[in-house]
Image (cartoon, rainbow, N blue to C red; front, side):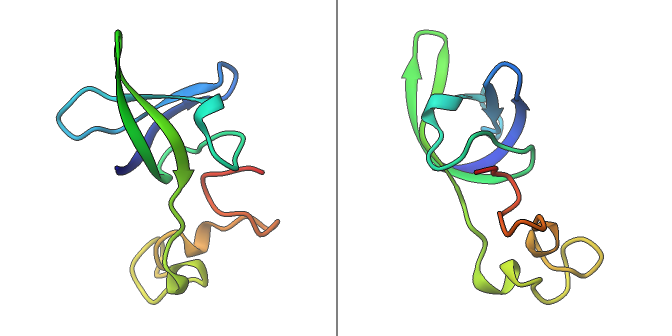
Length: 99
């Protein structure tokens, strides 16, 4: 599945992924692949599994934007910077993940 991070509680090491009209999907830090935490608004890919308390995301990976978006894109986005391209940190890491 693919969706957007709705909330992330860095101090508690968990958060929630949007699930359209359904209940939010819980994501825990141990289920993140190649990142330490997520940022609100980041697009992620994951496996969704039922749990006794609701839905839980496993194997959560940051969805990288297409090549044009990573380089600033063409139009759209924030102030014409294109998608997430303008939100790249100065360290070369992509928005939504800290490694």
